[in-house]
Length: 87
Length: 243
Image (cartoon, rainbow over all chains, first blue to last red; front, side, top):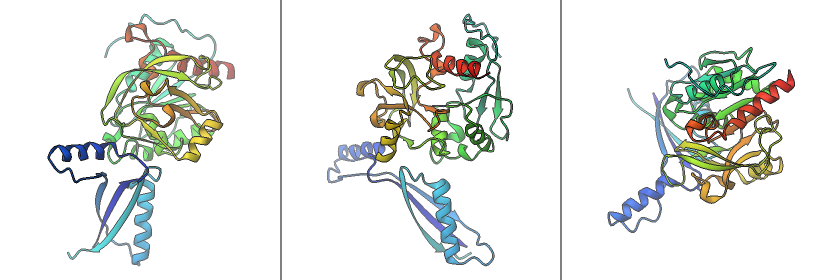
């Protein structure tokens, strides 16, 4: 069964308010070499393949899921990997 | 339930009164504020409409209230926009009838593409709950006709994700078409880092408004301000004029 790992990130042009706070916290712990922190989301989807589904069709479907729901195209970018998981 | 003991039944409307729908999502929490404002202060017919309903027939004005619909999971408004009622909200808007999205309602309208842009985490990372001063930028709309351009109003905000962002092209278009109806009155009043101090924007046909501050919480002197009344007075006046 394919497992899809989706990573959603804030667009580089957008200030990541949370990331900035985490960076400051790291600095206060002494990790002053950290120059930037950006926080995103990680989603794992177990996807049962549809009949006659090939890799391309699955990729298209995942892209559609990202565009419609998992990421907001105004503020976020996404990328994903598809892995075959043995059951 | 509390009974309506409001002393503010000053806004009795003669003639046609608009019928308001307050959409309730799981996690809405300003639905009652909106309901009581409409019923007790403005004496208009109002009903709650559950998010699983599919029609808004018979309603003149639809309010998407504040709160945390679906726990704000994924992104504020991201799940709510696919609720069954949202197709009816879209049709209502397409018919040119008013849709008012307050706070989480604004976030839902953006996610549903009924308004452009998006609302992201406040620049200070804090949930901000306080009065802010807004400036009315366009007073020729169904939501703002009771105000004057340049009028400053005190209306409370209560949100953690209210920083309005959009592309430079969209911002230019919003400005050119005068679709920014409310701005925070200067950077010191901007509680969240919104672009261009944007507090509320309308769609191209000016019948959909999304606003982060809560006009429904500023309708009785007891609450600290009555400056939010103008939004409801405008909606009611528009409906009466149309009838």
